[in-house]
Image 1 (cartoon, one colour):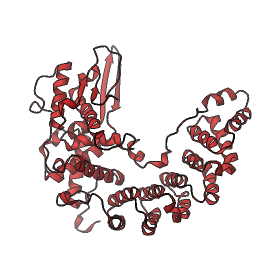
Image 2 (tube, helix red, strand yellow):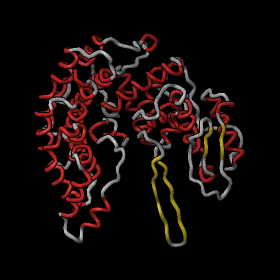
Image 3 (cartoon, rainbow, N blue to C red):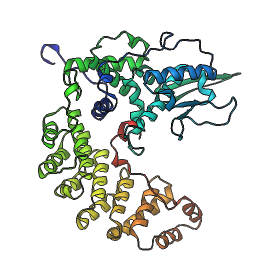
Image 4 (cartoon, helix red, strand yellow):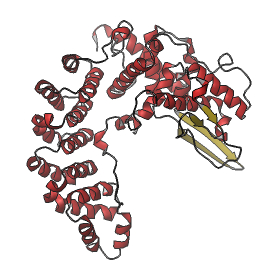
Length: 452
């Protein structure tokens, strides 16, 4: 029982989610101005903010679109809205054409969801001009976060899922579609952080939030007010260090809260200067009791190339971690670093029997290229097993064979010939074509909560 019955308020989001929101809110403040974090009017789903009757016609949508451009401070000359003709077969939302945003006529039936959709597409347009690369792993997440700083978080939070019910005669159907990359709890935490920074700690507009988002918002506000545990605080928001020194990052890694430590690891991974002290500090995190810190430490080391060589032994030890995410992150890091092949390759090959990390291990072996040729027999054996089951690791195993073998086509043909005659056509059909392959699951910690 805590002393005097007091307990620390809990945060509605995980360590990694919290760190991401705070870092990206800070980045958005840098891009669009600090005033967006400290002074912002909440846009409500009311006649005051969206005047005029809604009839579901293109004219109403364009009027709504113009309002959103005004609220998001986008000059009308920069963007245009296109709505296909009624009964058009197109299903396109958004557009690859710069400055052009498209929605389907079916989306005009729900104006609140349409606001969220258009705000997201307008955010994409704005981010394309703010040095956020198209291949940035969290680009779509940032597109969902951006409306929050323009006062449109209510629409984003309420549109994380869309429920629909249809009835035809005696038959009925109910479905739920995900409309946002960000879970409602993450959007709610971002909204609470935004309100806390503005000093709006008891806002009346929470009544417009969906119940789950409202509950997460209340928890987040109690947490922030009670702990002030955030990289962004009202008293320091105007003086934050956009480029913290290596010493400050290492101090945050040692003394900060859990989310502050995760954010320090992310910033260290992007740091151009790597010292023996920083390698030691990050390596020590591989033994931390928190799963997230162990996994993110491995990914940070993966970004440091040859400077991370002193951590190879600890990364090999992490291949036997009790948590799947940590094992996969360690395998990814060893493959990305491509150091000490004589030691690392046998250790990786031994983990091909672990079904939770076979795809990441295969990818890691492939990074060593021909140097990993001694592992080919094990790779081919596992590939034959996977072909029989049709499992998802096939793509990574074939990728590894092609990267390692001096004659991969002959190896793969020999493997097919060794299968039962009845299975050979099926095995041949499911072998992937030549081409690029996605990074494995262990490479991106964001995938643990956002599915990116």
